[in-house]
Length: 120
Image 1 (cartoon, rainbow, N blue to C red):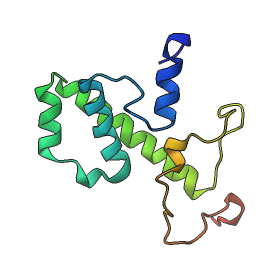
Image 2: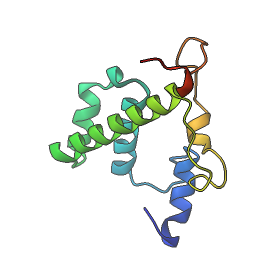
Image 3: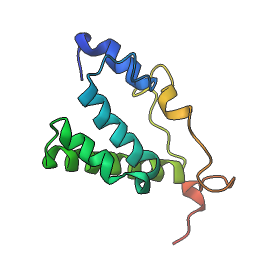
């Protein structure tokens, strides 16, 4: 979703506000599925996947959504582990609230490793 016509949708999604994004029911189900994978993949249920099929998502589309959500989760976890922040040019208005609002410590209160502290 790029371009002026999607500016409102993109901003709502950056804030994690699926209601304000104006998504149709099928798109919302798919994003909720991706969100489940991102937060706790083990919580994906057979019923959730069947619900996606029931509204018309194909096996290939469901699998692609799962792959993308899992891959982005990997990137985020690696960035958190090594305390990597995106350059300001990518986030000129700061970190999106969708990213920060549910953030919990990943390492039981331990600080993330700094790249300079890793030994080989």
